[in-house]
Image (cartoon, rainbow, N blue to C red; front, side, top):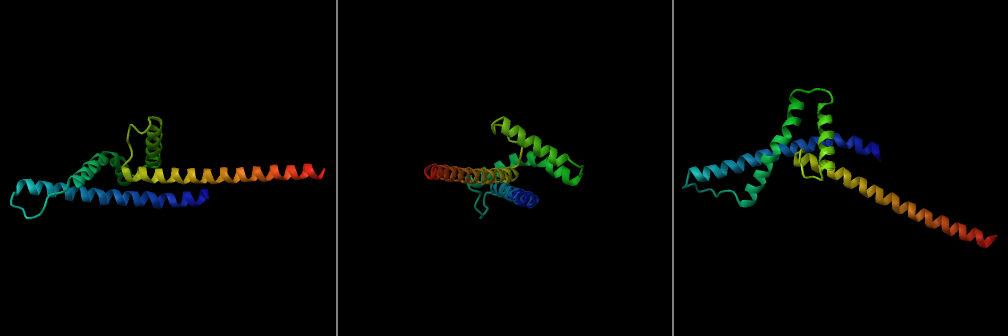
Length: 146
């Protein structure tokens, strides 16, 4: 079970990087549409919706968080990316998520892993409860036989 998670982690991180790129491209397109609408008043295209602008602003806030990961890819130094991720995850958990150091897509990867761990813990706890009940029934049965 653990080996499966470890093997899947690089794939999930690559997917998070890919999604950050897509979100950044959408952010640029949204801001260009907004700027074009302000500069060219007779533009036939409609400007971005308030929801699109909110998503673009959120992605703009993600860019500084993504830069350390990007720099580690451009100038790869062993252990830098892992150290930054561990530091960021630790600080976010200690400070109660008041500080956001990870980009949204990478945070979602860690959130998924945490949720999977919680599900596994619940399943293990349920199976332990069932085993305890079975042992208690066996002890009662042995007490009746004696």
